[in-house]
Image 1: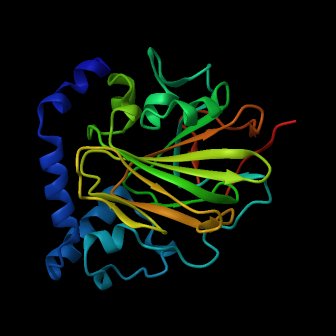
Image 2: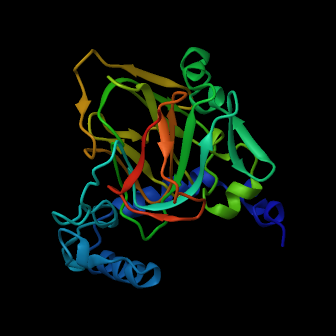
Length: 283
């Protein structure tokens, strides 16, 4: 079956209604039923509870509490590198931005301008820069960390569709990551200048949250929302937590031209762990 045919049902199903329902169910505190669902999920996806700060499945009041669980101290040591991998998951794609075009999959690309919500002044700062698209599967640790030091300058909520973001959908839906609902976080670093982390929503991703703002969605107002931050208001160090997904999704990172050189062993579909070396400053 072709990828385009495989994703056809996603155009037809009521994705937002399903996502809203999933969000309500995931936040419900249903006692033994919640514990049974979590136990099934752990078995179905092979979640490693031994590395969780709290490995006791029965102690989680809701599925969301379990899904955003912290890890025990030392579970993700930080590499001695200029840039760290911000999440657990797998590399979807990475590399050079071709003028303003980001490679998604064979036959598909999309623009930085669309990805960041239509702000051309922001997008042009990443012309011919570097990008990385990282996919978080259901089994993964779902907190997002900083790849390098950063001072938050802006946050942009961009409404959009709620297609799945799994590899099949990335191959079958044109412009997927610039079509889905997303939260664009813009940072400034003393040595590399601006960089962006985009948290991309998906079907049944009930919400996205940041450490400085809390839950961003819902509500889903259907229009772009923006927040500006004063210098020094939100400053995060390399490896610090910056946000989290309630159910799996994708992070897209943008860096300016000649700032980042990815590690030679990076390749699409390669598994990654938060805290491992992602790259070094380009020379």
